[in-house]
Length: 323
Image (cartoon, rainbow, N blue to C red):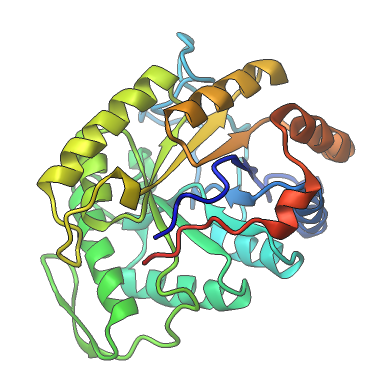
């Protein structure tokens, strides 16, 4: 996997479907403006259901290093378009823009469903999809879908192994604790050898998951010091655990992506982006509050501040290939 090209990749994380003005037409226009300005990629978050009241604690602060109480940045009657369908819509209205999930909640769908849906999206996007995944944090969402929250890490590990089987084997067979299938014909296979799997989370378990199953690591809303500590732990996990194909890999074999949500001035965001890049992040994806009425000007301002130029959008490759 070649990670040496275009170390300054900048993407955007944006939610669609929460209100009528952020519907299909806005998604189309936003994606096209993002591509035209030179952003590398557009990333869609996932929650299947929300709750106005819940006991679970959102794990991330309002911005990296903040001491404020973590709160999920959604209002009442929150909702999101399905991220795979939203990614497909964005891809079909663009030419080079890559699309990804930030992040898909892997334990909430059977791996054969993920395999078919992601492969379909990979075809409709022309091989421009990247599969960011996480294990989830909202216990009430798992309960509503009748999925055991306490086993979500084990589910994720097994689902990732089953995904590899479904995408790599002509007649796919996998037998585990939660998933069993024999000689299943899972077609079509993805356009890419496999869509790059970027695994989110900063815990030891998450970084072990990267070592065993991931093409990349996706850190989210953490300080440069926390990124540095996570990468040190990732190096340890890579040295101790084989990838699913039997290889012992190093950091050079793993794509590093850091996501950032920040409500502050663009200069502060730019400073954090530069810090992440200095630590080895090959891509930074940024989430900021963007008003629908002024999104074009705001996107222009973000691009200018972060050094994004239009020529990068239509000439940049530098994508983890899954190989």
